[in-house]
Length: 241
Image (cartoon, rainbow, N blue to C red; front, side, top):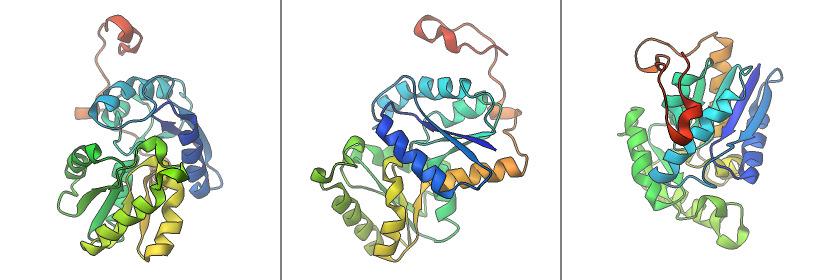
């Protein structure tokens, strides 16, 4: 099967991290194609960035019509509902995938994300997915683009928040940023609890949907968008159905 991994921001180095995480868990018959959003912000940190990243997600989907499924590799699940309405194949978001996976191996989930401004958006997502009472969000206050820079002390700050989450009663940890994808295995060994990377979880769930021959329902909320004109810079995104 052909699986599209979309990095909704425009930073190529993060795409490489996402691609490696996906390939590490993909089945032997899965072809991973990781792409960087062709337009949008360098990182997604809050509601404003997220809004301007959605067109890049839709454009990436449009340019991969032969994919069997797609993963949106941003923990905000950027544009996930719009993507499901548009794409002819299943689309999985890494936040939803991570929470569902973590919920199968633990009761209390600590989600460690980047900046404090992401706490409320992720609380809202956790509630949307039915995890409001089981998941608590922690911010390590490291910017997304600083995660890979040793001089920022990002790893120590992430570990500090994991420790705080466990002290608060978490028995499972979710890494709340695609840029942390390569840390899951190491951190699980350090803390002795399951540490879930959303990219890996989403890849396996996307594979399962394809194997089960399940596609997004076109009844109700994910019905194909109605044909109409869009104006200005968004004219090219007008629905054609």
